[in-house]
Image (cartoon, rainbow, N blue to C red; front, side, top):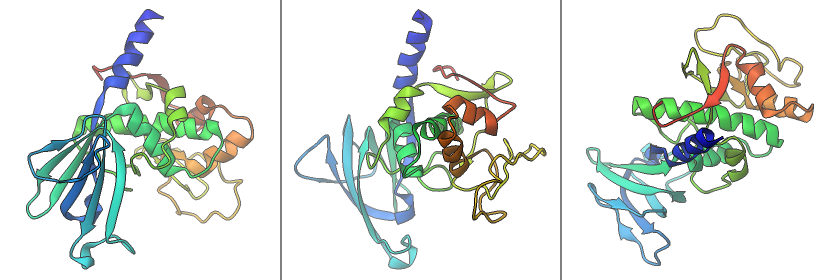
Length: 248
């Protein structure tokens, strides 16, 4: 019990470095640090906030903006680091792992039973830990949707704190998508196809990348009484759930 408590504390202290708002190609940004009433102009080489910050960016020129959006204002946990990326700002949120996981679950799943959200938390945490080690973690679909404090699911992160997927004693490559089109594999390299979601209506083949946890299928399994661990095992039969430590 003592060792598990130490590991939980270590996991909660693990910091991720997430590039945020890159789709907006920000040339300037205003930052409100730790609840400040007035903003500061974000400067390359500087950091802002300790516990959290609010940031506002505008996308220029319009041709490079995300569809139907030229600006964004969002609140985040953690500390903002600003870097120069050749005419644009590279914005990095240095955030604790569990705060990040809570935000990802809230951004990826609008509404689903608790077990499905907890299953996603385990997969999202695994993905994030591997991506952090590789040095590339962003806030878009290329990685995982991350919108800061908006709709953050703190409960799902807490109930699964530190739980990740392992393969042969190492962090496993773990993926998820909203809709897997009726079939899925547990990894990109695995040839065996599993079809736990073929019973769901209105699915078209190939509507998701078909690897890892299917969020829609996980929600369905949760309505049938499956636990978070049972859902994860359904999608990742060759992997096992363990606890992450700082020496991952």
